Length: 112
Image (cartoon, rainbow, N blue to C red; front, side, top):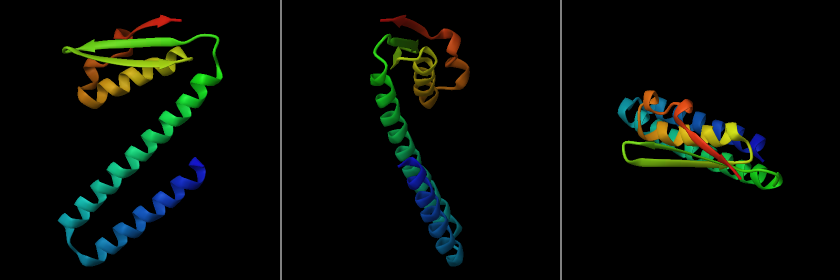
């Protein structure tokens, strides 16, 4: 499904940008491109969460719960893979803070 969806999304983005390029309105083009990027990012994040959920529940032998506390905010990630759980935490933190505060070494994990 992912292989079919990404080319369609890319083609729609290209078509939209070509239409706006012909109009010559730079500000409008930039706003439209930013909007398309936000949509694509949301869709990719949704697909990644769906794939992670499928992979997490396919392996029941162990589960990692990782967390990071930064500036009073707590970020959590869970996966059957320790590396994936840490990556989830770091990605959540990085979306709110600078990368220098969201180091993988600072993440603590529990194994269940």
